[in-house]
Image 1: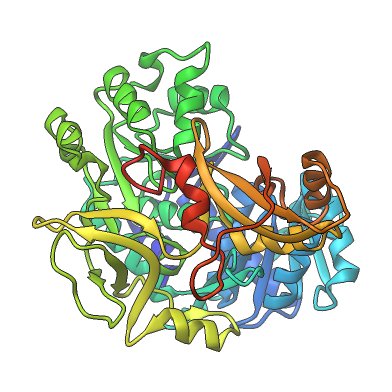
Image 2 (image 1 turned 180 degrees about the vertical axis):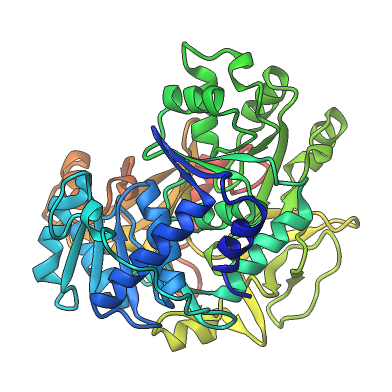
Length: 515
């Protein structure tokens, strides 16, 4: 259960095969292994020891893949940061995982330099650009010998992936070598062979979905085609040029491709597998995709960062006309290989098929917990089971239907937004007495962030002022897309805000409260 085995195996089976395509750059498996091993030597020279964290602030690029493997080769922990976060959010996450070294691309250089004095643990900044000289990536590997593989494995920590927190702060989800090797094995077991796959990596590398999507393809000796930032025209061009077989596209990405004026079905003729998980999905969009791309099988995953992004999976066979007519196509599929799933009541007892309860998971893909958060770890990971906070039900065939969320999380355009994060920002405005944040249906984004606010007596504030206030505190995708002002908020008997009441008028007519 060691991630560097991917490179060792590739050197024996296909060293000249292309592992990564990044624009005009191409890295064979032999080159990827050599560069990662020499970069590991540089990490050691900077003082990085096994178990230490290494930060990344940058978009998808071949250097980021090399850094990821260099971390594992040296025994360090890969800590990619959300490039869409505000400086305050990044400072909090970096202060939490405490890396001594931060790698940043050109686009995020100014932000990285601003973070250096703000986060005392950061001692070295490495710029992933084309410039020569000290502190720039091209100069790092010159003259270096490869570091022997540290052979980190098993329960050794491989990555910290930060996810929004229900308390308003991000949490570092710990993923071990066992977790990430198991996720590769899980997906290889549940899919067609990947050895000739060409996979588009359109999801940012700071998302668990990106890390766990690339691993099975690399394990099988396939090729990754990187997108620094999603753009429909670029995606189509890459799919056409590189013969992409696997296209993981959150629904908003898929919609943008199908709506693009240059879209022609034959441009996507190579796509065999179309993965549409990671965000709410619209049936009309998926059925349209089936009609115009009939050769591309639809696959969906249900999971979360804490489960290495998987739990259940549905297949093309679950998306035929009969499935759409019966509602079966709305399921999140059946439990994945290596994973156990249950739906339980408040006492932790299994509920009968068709009964709604909380979805719980366990298996080698499940994280050991949150970095330096023992109380939150104990609350979420109980008796060996990951309590997802999602409500769902199973049918007699073991198909899972996600009905609602126990946690107040909104999925907008493939990004997770926790209500508490936005509510904490709103509460800092002097005119806000109380605020609640909910997800409401949105045709393009699946769900949109909607704020409901009670204004303090004698004060006034506009929707634009609220948005401007939040923009200085949280990432743009977390900003309320709409604001509603009420005299009071509905409360539960326990005195908590009854968000189900706030949602009712927006979700009327929907079969489930997850769009």
